[in-house]
Image (cartoon, rainbow, N blue to C red):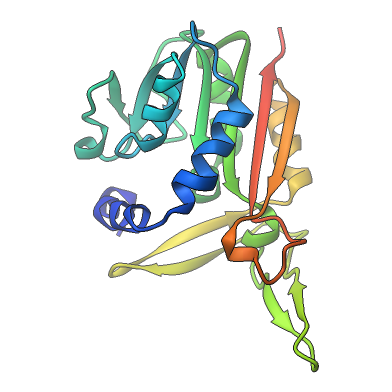
Length: 220
């Protein structure tokens, strides 16, 4: 089963998760800092939850999603499978992806494709699960006295792990923070702002970031 079959499951997941409204979407708006005159591409827009928040800031947004029944929104939207982006070169002022990159096996192509469709000097913003969480074997543990600690797992090595979802599994692809930034730089993206943030899932280990937000600027 692929993401084209998991759309319904995902909608049910986020419908009951207050973190999307209280943490995830605010982090995207903070890291993207959308301009009122800008046109942005929402990579993996889903049913448009984050897109609506960006539009409310005064920007225009084009959605892109694999699931055609999700991508049929009240704003312009496209159906496509990332990392391919089916629009012309230098067409938008920026692009963003929320909880998407960790599910793509080929993000170097995504960085290259986004650099192609964003105008020179434009931006790319990403909110994703922090690499501290996606490393295989990474998890909270407790010592003999019950103190919460963090097991880093195979943080330095690329890898993947899966969690159950409906009658299938969702795969998380892990890259270290260094690998992520190096891949972006190789496609011409210059890091401009980065935020590491926790939310309620890390209340027992507040020193471990749960989410990562990055904004890059496309070099001329």
